[in-house]
Image 1 (cartoon, rainbow, N blue to C red):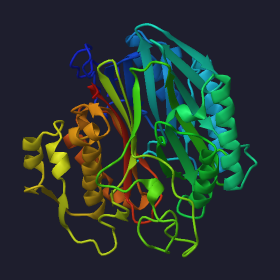
Image 2 (image 1 turned 45 degrees about the horizontal axis):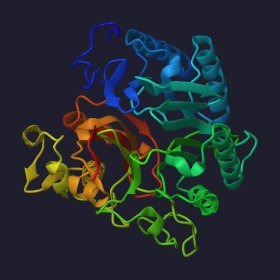
Image 3 (image 1 turned 180 degrees about the horizontal axis):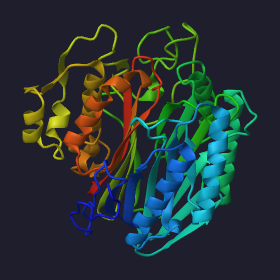
Image 4 (image 1 turned 90 degrees about the horizontal axis):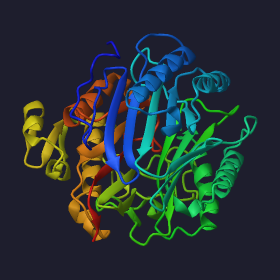
Length: 468
């Protein structure tokens, strides 16, 4: 579809400005304390290899920003999802794409993630977030950007990784955290000010996740997270920026001396905190850090919170970690011997962003349950219910925040689907499209950190509210 046609819109005064996901650019505009925030995905209109599609998509992104009075300097972050056959091609693709970025004047922190987009024939997809500050400034440095506004400083860091020749995950993790720390120090930030991490890791279902968790534990043991352990996504990749076992870290941090800015970790009443998981694996036992290998061996716990929230200036932002179909500490609706049945969605149905009437027209609902034919559908519904419980007014109040947040107020949804479930991906996509037609969404192929998890999703939610 022609990208220059007028998008569906609901205005720019703090309301979403949307292009549907089927179009080249899906965009949402929201007001934050820093100014106006633009979050979107760009997918190519035509075929081609990853570099060709990236070049087209980057130009389309640039045109979209320009039409809204934005420059590439105001892009705070980009994630590029690429489909390449191996790590060498991944590194060559990244090199060529970064050259294109330089030619087009993009200096934003950018990570290249070896996750193929779910749609057939799409070898590249771009997620971008730009901020147009009402006052303050944006400063760029190597793979980092600092946004300053009203005494609040935010730092975006992309693709902290190891040397390409490093093959061991533990060494990769140490090098990546060292690089991340150097960037933070150079910009005047402490690593403890991080509110959100992304951890992209090859072979996540093998020993790599346990090895990574061990180094993360060692690093975090030397830090004091006064506001709680940051939110995070730990997700698998097909390829990476190293010869073997590629690891990519990203971080977003916030620091201020203002006493009216409230930042806190958020727990989920339906789920156990990840840092309280069992320290022992059990072969294929559910919800253990390494489900397939090392049965009976002690492992490090995954150190992250279900979400981090900040309340400031009558606004609340929640960075929601990668959330999956986990209840307490066990996988809910595992695929083995799954039979079609009812899924508990009571929290989802109570969320004010859900059109229950429309939902009842499209899906079978009985009391607080919804019917799911396949395991991946069941896990998708349960994951959404977990998110709804996380941001419910009651749960936010327990964390001293007064806010009635809506799942429809997410800036975007990034949904990771296990490669073996590509035959059912349309079912997952239809659920998100039905619930959140005005929210940009992207679906990629990725292994989740537990064998029985078929999908995972993350988001960032913006709404009104404040500290109680």
